[in-house]
Length: 179
Image 1 (cartoon, rainbow, N blue to C red):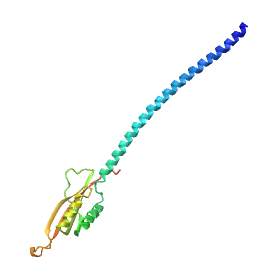
Image 2 (cartoon, rainbow, N blue to C red; image 1 turned 180 degrees about the vertical axis):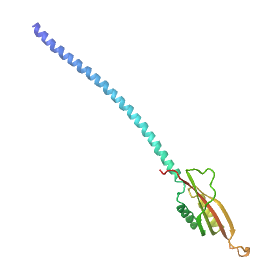
Image 3 (tube, one colour; image 1 turned 45 degrees about the vertical axis):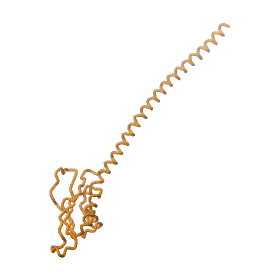
Image 4 (cartoon, rainbow, N blue to C red; image 1 turned 120 degrees about the horizontal axis):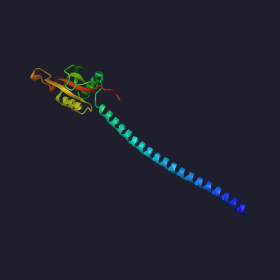
């Protein structure tokens, strides 16, 4: 009988050792799982930070593109076409329009070029003011550099209210690499 009890005790002892080993393994597995979950949480936090950084860069890229859109095209023919269109829309009768080559601006560097267009035409004072307002509200970096006015007729008795205008319009173009 003692042998039978000893045998059962050995079986229970074996069962208890195996159960203890399983419980120990489970607790270690739980610790490993908690550690992995903690690591995943940290990785998620780092990914959120990277996402925020990328979103900031995208925002800055959009702001940069918006700022660059304010410059005129590097193609002087396109700029001349825009100036011609502004003149026609405001009622200036164009006699001639051509690129003008004047002095370089101080501060000009490798990133910017200055495109000059010289426009000669005839218009009323009202249409000239409309043209100048169009230049002012154009939405790009352009300005009138020179403006010469003369009566359309040399004889004051024959003055019809038409002015002879000679205008130099300057557009600033960005020569940097495009985005």
